[in-house]
Length: 65
Image 1 (cartoon, one colour):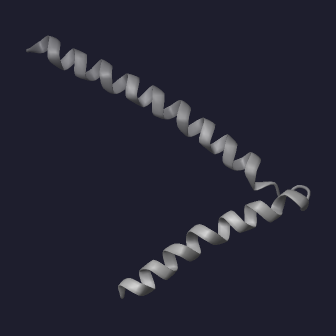
Image 2 (image 1 turned 60 degrees about the horizontal axis):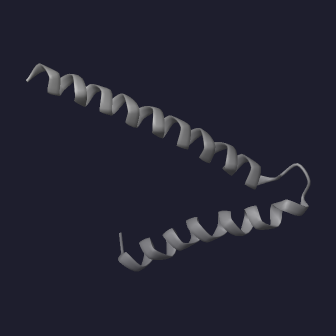
């Protein structure tokens, strides 16, 4: 794909959801910010749990050596 088309498509895919979420605050039930915050908190939680599991596995692997 052409690099300029890729850059343009990337900009569209970044800017449009941000603008949509910004204007959704006045639309009542279409509040994308609360959904985005929930996904971020869930991702943060599972990321920390995953890192903890990774460190446990690395520690067990070091014990074997």
